[in-house]
Image (tube, rainbow, N blue to C red; front, side):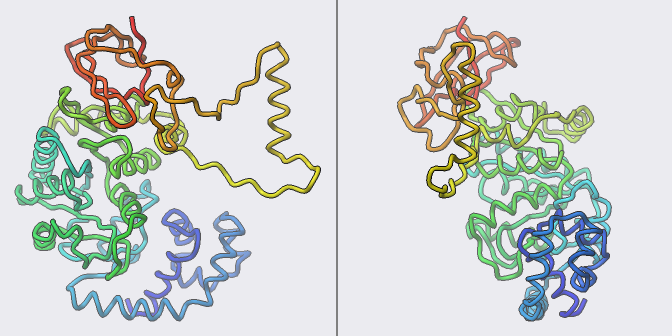
Length: 433
């Protein structure tokens, strides 16, 4: 592919609001980015059904095509220097992978790679997790990756410290394949602590990035990297993580993309609050072991939960309230009119109106810094080890340990079958018996 052809790919993927899903829609309708570029705005709307505002963005961005020609020329030169490739969904073997994963609509249509591109020829599964794993979680991630890679499957992760690195090493030590997805250019060794691992992956596996060569890592790029990890994988294993973590961002993308999600369960000494939350919301299933047989048994048994994904994850990442627009003097805003109607409806039976959007004060006495709180948040925390409790999902249990963190309590409960689960007070509902 020459620089002029490649320029259209960069142009399409860089247009405001045109992410992987809309790119796929446009490519399915027109066949190539150049055809999209040459199409009229009205034709784009009719053939794809995208919003007029997005079609306007596409139209406006056409004037910048010269910049993308220069970018394409630069990227082709860098790819030659670093012995890498710029691949699009029209290039083999990525084209075949892209076509065969029609359910993975968030696959980036253009990627930058270094290493063994035959990694796209096998089934791919992601293993992600915390940068500071417990020994148990680290061993499980390494063993699972080793066993799956031994049986010819490709392990996908993000080259981060901790669980990601252990998953990559497990696959490499098995003599198998692994794909490291970066939140920077594929030629950037990040994090620097994993420079040796990066080199091993280049020689045995594949480094992938949707960002051009030379792109520096940013928090937004790293977040976007999680989407690509999920998009390149059939299923995602969240080995261990906290509630607000990059691995949970990957889990959210997996849930939105309708991918199976799995996690492990540990004793009270290991906190996997993110994984436990995913199980409690019926988004993830527990992995009982680390063999390939264990994994595929769980995969075959997995049933997708029919839930509102965004609503569930708003418990962890509440939506920021919209900024109110200045109103004309004397006129009531739409929000005020809605509140007045709700107030009138709620007081018909003589009851006092209470807005559910008003956050109650946490029992811990500490601000949760923008986190939503459960119904029990305004009650005093009175639990202690030895208390018998009831959980809506796991049934009756006995508290064995309580650990206070900055804004929460981690409660270890022994349920039936002597299984100990660590629950977060903020995000679970326990009733004392």
